[in-house]
Length: 488
Image 1 (cartoon, one colour):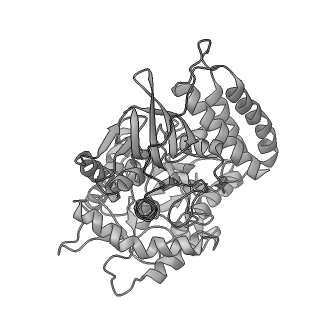
Image 2: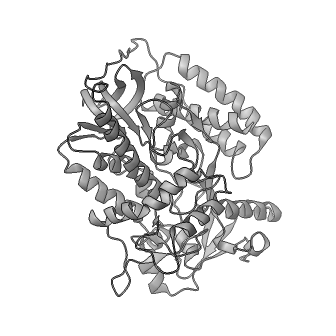
């Protein structure tokens, strides 16, 4: 793992893995993941991947564009959005070539389903675990590449811009390693763990965003956070089980504590309104009824159909004591996705030369103010490919610039370092949950910003062990600081 590389990729979700697959095998590549290979938000994605692939009569790229614009409040970046929708067919076709097992109809055609905010059936899926299927097939392909080194359980502690590229401090098995790359791709995922409750995996602490921020990259719209309206309302675990958008796409009803439908009072699109609209409606209805008891009911559909269409959700609900074929499921909004992040152009390059960001940690602008369902996996793939193509272009056009190996940064290890104080990450999560959840509380945001600023300063100036606790606490503090600064 120590040594010199052409490209270093941080993260093994769809964006990171697809970046490696899209680069030529002549390049020496290091992929870093701070836990096991398949622990990422991409693998948790249930619904599917949206796109116009081998168009059917009633769908086209312009309709996909229009639906994305409506969901995003027409705040989308038009140039990036054009890249997203036009490249969709190529990337979906490549997934099929890689062996991704998308569901098919009885006559063998690819099955397209419907989700909230879409005007057409254009979501390709593998049951209700599409993200895992896609990520697994990408991982299988990357493992076969002779030019790629995969470092699992390797914590990226810091990144510095150096002469000729980037120098990374990586902690693995208690030992700090230094790896240097001419190019770097950040594919570190979301920020869900900055909240008390999230659908995100344990690794989603915003590390890549924090590294980019410290290097001086432009971070944009970090306060554009999507709260998914239908997370399972467990109330006991930080990582909330997601009840896919596709369940509402197949006809599920939203019910309040009285087991009454209520979306007709908030939006003419009812249960199929975009996620921000539905989440806002649930919270508003909850305040009206002084209750956080809400349900998703699809028990009126055929039970065999539900078990086949949503096998993972069905089994997971049974584990919690609910049979979705017979009764409503308790749900409530929770943090789900980040629309903002490290600002990039249409080639996925940041404001720092040769530093790229793909997937959820990036801000391409394609989602506008609110992501349209199932556009996230598509975004990760499309812009990972764009990043790879841009790296190849740079190497071909300016070989002299990249002929020498990058420098190494002299990372110092303190002999007097101490563990960080306990409870820092928990305190940050509580602050964000109170200050900025669905309907922001500005007074709490102002108070929270002052405290988060103190925590951030202490972590940056204090003499602490550089380990998982420290790196993730520093990342969460940085992310919370940027979000609340934007809000107030």
